[in-house]
Length: 336
Image: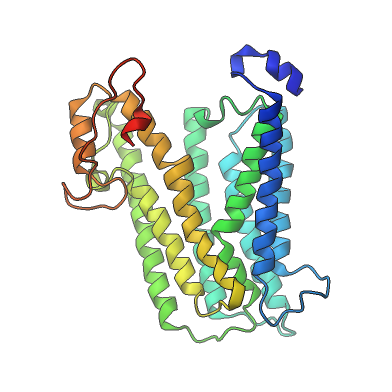
């Protein structure tokens, strides 16, 4: 479908030439950001003038290449069903490539204990999340986030490029750990144990809350209701909180390895927070819930007394001024 034909298709909403150009610009920018961070991941001892592609730079290329290859059939068949699954496959591919490439630097293929642990952690997380999201989109037949994006080559391509950056930035610290695996000590430091405990805590919260929500949805009496069961009684988005926490755990585990510009790895958990809270998760779901339950007093009471992320006792951190949108022009965004 060309941009011209897309403009004429009134079923997908207004599309302009400027919007398409903007989307292509974002796609290029995402790779530029990734490349800048790939360069920053080099060890201070590396020769940046030797012209060789580093392990982290290769990871960046792999991450975006997989997205481009998956985008082609996805656009051709106008489907988003394999979007999340592709993201998980990319995580596993990039993680284990960096693991192998980092060990291959040594003549006897030595690997640090830290590298083994973080690679296994990402694998567990990636398999669990990827299978969960894939089953969900198969169950629901589609992902509503893509309804207006799929018909546009530029916008749909942009979402795949953003996923490439997401994979690279989120596990950025892991790729650095693996790339430095032959130079790191096999003895784990205090930060490794602390980081591992943080990761286990976050992963447990995410898994439990996702399971609780899946179970809650199977009960007929809950159809059309908002969830306030289990961890969701204490947090409006406990699964997202767990996701944020586990990546802070990975970053803490990388502290013993990082040097110089490699401390840019702190951008990983910060990026996860910003993405989930401001872009694709919390705000979008809050807006949708505000609109859906605008006339439900129990929902607004729940929102006023329940923290948006952190599981806390009732009344701690809720949105005290939360109230239904008023008037024809009222917007749920105003209550965020």
